[in-house]
Image (cartoon, rainbow, N blue to C red):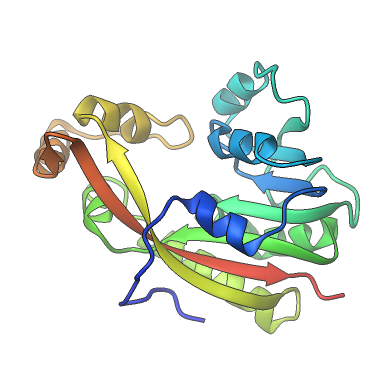
Length: 236
């Protein structure tokens, strides 16, 4: 395993990656850290006989998700990966979209074991994590440097494999397109997210805005976020 790749040849929406790696139809799918449920919705409506349990720790996001009434095959719950409200061996697939590094450091290893507990033997774990590189990351780290927690997430994944909690099936690297219409859009989607408090002083705010606007074009600000996907499997 490696935390980053110097040569990433694939640029595509993440849906293309998880749909290639996983068979989601007729499965009970656990999503850990569902955020605003955008990916949850895509998964829930894009196939057949999919049952989704979507967990989130941010109470504000969770309350908004509870108001979603058009996804009858999705159950939303307020919970973290370290204590999953499911029975033993009850899920077929677990998904973590850029959420493992948000788990408290002291709970990462426990979370990996908890995911194993709720997965059926042979169940799959899809973990995507942003790589600490790229133009978007250079803007983000001006006010929210995630290097240490991303490294910790990678090391926790490696330990889960070395300790036999999971087997590594495949490691994939790709560039995920990101687009913001303008700086206001960036503020809404990044600076004002409810799961993390970004208290920027005036000087940092001005610097972030300046660096962001350097990326603006007639088509908005477009970035390619390098991402690593670790596909794991619970041993039979």
